[in-house]
Image 1: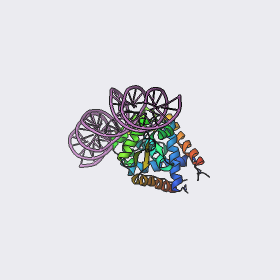
Image 2: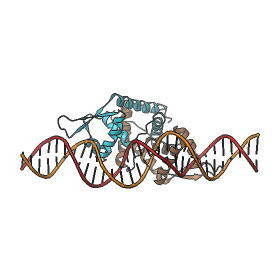
Image 3: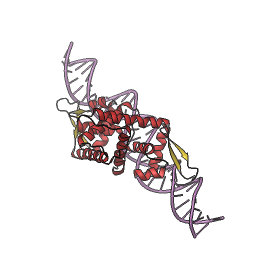
Length: 116
Length: 116
DNA sequence: TCGGATTATAACGCTTCCGTAACAATCGGA
DNA sequence: TCCGATTGTTACGGAAGCGTTATAATCCGA
């Protein structure tokens, strides 16, 4: 199964959602930050810095910095891996889950309003 | 008419597309920048700094700075309004149009691959 | 014509992010 | 028990964005 969209519909949807995010949000996230957030919240744990860096195809410091920022905002948290102390496990937070949920709702409602 | 999505589908779609943008793109755009770009390319001209600032609900310097960056990348261009020299008209470029087209294709193909 | 309103930009000090390179901590096999 | 490999973070100089405030150019009505 799949979602069928024409290019113009796809772009209009993206436009509406992004505009919604910009307008209601004080924080202006980058594609990388959103990508990290969605990976952590949509894909099965555990998530590590190395794993995220590989998935996004960026360097590890990029992940570390993004986690610093989003950790400060309490959208994710970090914990040492007990089994291998070199690893850091990135965990979900209540605040982060609510944020993701809000984005989901925004996409859904934008899809509903989408002219075709 | 509209696009019907469940929240989980919506988020998965967003995840796939954002991930695609991060992976293939050297430049890491913010929600504001993408928003400006989509507004310029999807909504009827003319586009001015003031108009974009009002639409995004951000200050004008935010728009000016974003236009500086994206102008440097040749994704948009600026021209004085002949009729009112205080205004700056933001114009589309070939490079920008191709970029937008690429995003559209990315969303469409991600929608197709979306598990339901 | 002149003066307030409007438009976009520049300037300011500050924060965040960049890529690269160096680093400390830890692991695990020889 | 070493010692190379691995993990995540820090350090670095530079670029870019922030919000606020100031400024130059232009408009337009009294």
